[in-house]
Each structure stands twice: as C-alpha cells, then as structure tokens.
Image 1 (cartoon, rainbow, N blue to C red):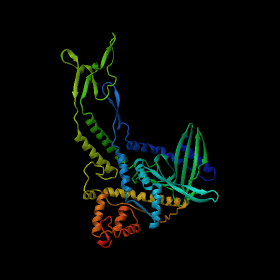
Image 2: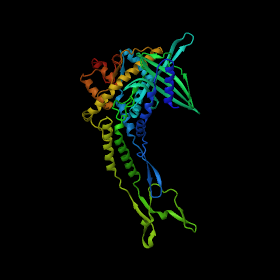
Image 3: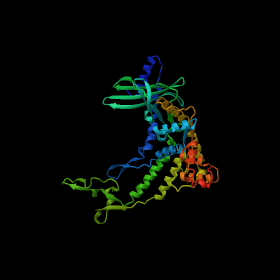
Length: 487
C-alpha cells in the first residue's frame, strides 16, 4: 500500500462520515515524477550516459565518470538570487507593523527559507513553504502564554495536490514518511480551502501490509480553521511543455537540457585533454600475457590494464627483424583547449537564453561595464517580472498566514495590508550602487534618509532618527554639524 492508497482510504473515511471527498487525482503525480527525476539528475550532475559512460581499452570494459559543471544548479541558484536580493522587502500597513514582521522574519529565518525554496522550486519544478506554530498554553487557565512560529521548506517529493483545477489548488497534502521495520508511518498535513477559510487536518497513517490505521496527530495550533492560508507554492512562471497533468510547472532549466549536456561534455573533454595529455601507449596483446605450463595456457601479467594503456591485435604489433613482439606506438594527444573553451562559452549562453536568464548571465568573460549590462539585460528583466507577478501573490498569502499564527501566539501583527517591494533595476554590484547613490546624494537627488533606507534596510523614521543622532559629529558620509544642515 503506497501513499496514494493511504490518501484514498482517508477520503473514504471522510465520505463515510458524511463529507463526500475524492483524493484519487493525487495519483496523477506518479506520472509527473518521471519529468522531475530527469530535471533532478541534471541538477545533481549524475545523468546516465552523460555523466557516466563505459570505456574499452581492447582488453576489458571500465567505467568512465564525467564530472559535471552542474549548470542547472547554477541556473536555479542564479534565479533565486536575482529574485530575492537584499532589495526585496515585505512591508505592512505602517512602520510599526513592518518592524514587527521583520522581527518575525528573523525568528523564522524567512529570507533564507524563501531563497532556498526558490532554488528547489526552480530546480524541481515546484516546492512549498509551510507555516506552523507551537502554542504554549497554561493548563490551569487554558489561556495562551506564548509560542513559536515556524517556517519549513517542503520539497516536491513531499507535495501531493489532492483537489485542483488548472493552477488553482483547493486541497494539498504535505507528507512525511518513516519506515519502522515492516511498518510505514505517514505523517500527513492536509490543507484545504472551504467557504473562505483554510482548514488544516493533521493525521498519522500507520501501514502494515495492506492494513492502515489513522490517528489524529497533535495539531500545530489550537485551531483547525484559519482566516489565511498557511502555505505558499513556489514555482517558475513558465509554460509546462512536458505535462499538463498537474497544477505544477516545469523546471526553469527544462528547456535548457541540451546546452547543459554540451557544457558538461565540453568541460569534461577539456579536463581529459589536460589531465591525460601525457603519452598514450598501445601494446601488443601477447606482451600482456605469459605462458603457464606445457599446455601453453596464458595469464595476464598485469591485473589492471584500464585507462591510458591500450591493447591492439598482436599481428599489428609485430615488427622488426624476426617479427619480434614490441610496443606498437606511443602517442601524445593534442590538447584542444581553444575548441573546448568556445563550446563551453557558446553553450553557457545558449543555456542562459533558454532558461530565461538572458545571454551572458553565466558567461566566463571579464565583467561588463554598467552601461553594457543595462543595454543587454532588458529581456532578462522582462522574464524576471513574469516570475515576480506569480510569486508576489503567493508570498502575500504566506505573510498573512505567518502574521495570523504570530497573533495566535500572543504577538499580534496586523497584516491587513501587505506589499512586496522588488528590485526591478538591473542588478549591479553593491559597491557600484553605493558609488552612484553617493553621487546622487551630493547633487541633492536623494536624501541621506533615502540612502540609509536603500542600503541599510531602515524605515524612514529609523533612518531619520539615526541621522538626527549623528548631528554634531562626523557621520558615515563625512559630514559634521559645522558643514551645514542635513538634507
């Protein structure tokens, strides 16, 4: 009995209890897994017949392992960094509520988790962020005394959409599996939307053979229904060219698999030329054998003939007076660095274009000037905007859910208004950004408060207060009280 059987059995129990439920569509995930496994193998760099091969030296076969540059991993990480830069911010209705959420961000490791979710989501096609809370209750008064809000990254393998229509998921299960001898234990959290409420069911399914027992798991809070959804789905905003059977997306590098192969093969070829550019020896097969006994049986003189030591048919190895058996040839291969290097650079550009990053994003060339970057990255920024449009709605849902859980623990946060601030300009290095900002500051285009807000992440009130506190002494900009008023 697998997880799909377990989910269907639970749906039967709910139906028998008077709540008609059908979780049979969860089985569609099994058909989609084949695509995800392909993407994962490229991400890990262990693609069959690309990163692994078999060689033959005339005597025996031996495994050949090609080392991968893991270009898909670089692409997924590049997208995550580009989307969730330091300039990415979540703001609430005012500075007080925003500061409360920033404290919650630090407690839940929000920024790190959302970046990690983006990497896995863009690599595997889909991942999720799931909020929960441990509530502390006084048993005598049955009142909440505190608690801790948590945020977890849920990988594709543990996501099971149950009820969905196109991209809209009405019910989803988050599943953890544990094996105990001949018993499998599934810990399942089912999140569904009903009449504008988010309903959470936590159950444990114990499977032994064909039997399954369900028990209610300890709830993460004292509520089963919430005003806000406690999870968000992180996935690339790209068309699903491989399968339309699930409300998921394809991996961000699914269309870039061909150039990913070329990069790995060219890089491995370059390494092989450099590493194995030494002499290759071809040896007559009889030189590797010696006679044993009068019957003329032979055995190998060397146990290991793998690698750069090749055998050839003995009649080709005969030469010299009397046909004496000898070494046939010594060869030093040409190191084709220039050819391989060109393939690597061209394939990197191809992969960047097909994954939406924009040509040159991963090219191995000297860094372009700021002007060159600005004029060549328009397409990348358009693609970035497409992903922001989808992710913004999901992140707003998650922020509202986190704030509701925080309120339940006694730390009330008003999330009636949530805004997501993206960095929509071309990404250049921080030093260059600060240099340009200092020039704008000198000519009065921006204020000192705006500078601190941009590079120190401070609210306007905090920035103004710190600037006021620095009056009378030289500040970070080199200004002092005797040099005029602050802008």
